[in-house]
Length: 368
Ligand SMILES: Nc1ncnc2c1ncn2[C@@H]1O[C@H](COP(=O)(O)OP(=O)(O)OP(=O)(O)O)[C@@H](O)[C@H]1O
Image: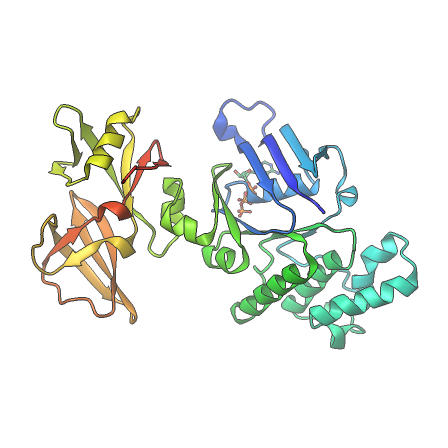
């Protein structure tokens, strides 16, 4: 069993770090609970591989602690951590058979042969590798090789967590879905903590129950796919998750008039929003709204704002309307049966679908 706790963790590759920018992991407090199916999602360079390597022991953190079930493991080498890591490119021995590749981690631990065989057969069966057991690994396809890599993590009974670092990169698109299903199945059967690194939101949300979104060396939100969509905790999450991402616009709050402006446009916000804005201790104020939640009308309605249609792209089951407001481009996602729209359209940002961000972090507005 392993609950993995990251405590005041930070890592830099620089010998002489000057500022936060020199840290690949800036400051992290995080708990991966035993048995969870997690994704670590973020753009290239945000620190995902660094974090995985710190958890597996390939890298020692510059600051902070890694705890497994409460025990500090900072100094433990990877082979003593009961963690398996599956990399982008399969790590297998080409000249060995599939059977011997799967048996390797067990034989390496001096497991008696009578226990090696049933375990290898069990794992081969789950991964649908049984017909290939006597084949040399070098003759396998990329997805078969990656399955062998995964199998090497699964044969060991002492493995309590498997870390996957973009494991489907070299897999054909049509096989990716199948392998993801397989991983889910394995997770349900073995009660192993799984952390799956990816920069693809679809891969993350089909695999994981909870996703940690990483941005500039920090986990900016840890939540279910639905939470990331409905209440992005940081502007980056709003922008990164969803297709297209969330619309954001800068707000200016005028204390004297108790009014919020977007450029010269005053916004019809509720008293709850205005009260929250009044308390904000920063001028970095933004509103965010998902393209799905912008109301679009063909004629004027109460509290709507007239805007110019720039483009309407029909994508079959939905359409994307692009419009500009105060020289900023917005996207609204419309259902298939949307009304005919002229050059001027009337949009509304429903209060309860807006998110308010102060210094890029979401602030709860009390709607009661
Ligand atoms: N060995 C290294 N030496 C110096 N800098 C490194 C090293 N490895 C990573 N970095 C830097 O640390 C930061 C985080 O890199 P990391 O590989 O952890 O990100 P990532 O999110 O996994 O990106 P990718 O998806 O491209 O692999 C980047 O700025 C990267 O350039």
